Image 1 (cartoon, rainbow, N blue to C red):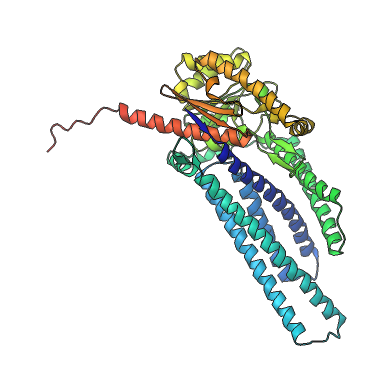
Image 2: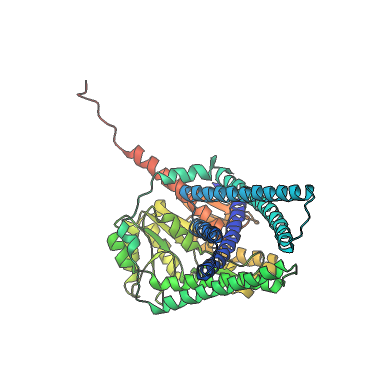
Length: 492
């Protein structure tokens, strides 16, 4: 059975791009308002009205930054509810700005209709400034409101789009998974290492980058107020510096990651085992190219967020990593012990997520899954690895789209061959020439294949969520069917 997720992935990618733009704008706005807030406090004649609106702006931007960052990489019913609530709050504020701008405009028209002659030049300047503010509120508020309404429709499109072949929407799938969530012990979220000065240094560099980006934006704003056209290079540079600051903070965050043994000692739920080749392991990707400088969270990070309510997301760490990457809980084992640890985790795991690769160790892991009869709880994914790499490499692949597709299909063919030889399944015949395999899962004796014509990290996570939901539903139905019938003898 084959399921095409192209349409759903298209809606989700658009929403992700919109959230990335909103995050970067809100983050730079937050830093700019924070600087303005401290300037107002240090000013002896600071107006309470100005201080109130600046404080309100800081709180609103903080809320937007936190929500977009925390929920943009999470596919869950609660995350979509929080995003919808955020956009509704933003819409109310934007419509309020439009109404305020219209009131200002009506007041100005009333003043001029009465034929008032401005003898005081200062008062005339204030009226002219009020005209500019009125036009800004009406124009920016209207455009932003349309953009926000589009995002609300985008959320509904993602949730309500019917998945071909399944007769179900993503909303229904997420609701079914929400009923199986189990919270981790509260102590597990308190584990953090604080004895890492290098991590503090990276975070400090990121904070400085935010301040620089805010200062550049302040400079551009002053140029715009003087009715001059701000240089495009400076506009792009401010966004790029802000994104680099976010990347530095993510880099510093890895230094505070707790040890895997400590996490598993507290969180006693059945783990979700993540198997992958170290060659396919990538950190968050930073893009400084069109359409917007932004950070794309890694596939592993997105999967860790999805599986967190279900169980600890565990992986064997690479001995070459000086610091663990963000995402799965890392367990460090020596070369002669890691296979024993993987076998033990396979037996105890609630689910296994196996990234199909071409290394000999991945082949061994898939063979162990088959030998230990864990295929029914395994989700196979096919990583889109060629979208990662240096900025120059990604730009080259964007410019040579056809060559990129051929290269990606060649990699996919090798991975399909590994899975077919190791697991004994037939997959290649089900995939068309213009389709990319995202995930496969075995439901009893039927192989479910999820494909898309537009491969991406977001598409891969979507496919795994759909596959996991169908697998869990099948496991629940099998468990109910295998229960012995309840005896009614002796009952009145």
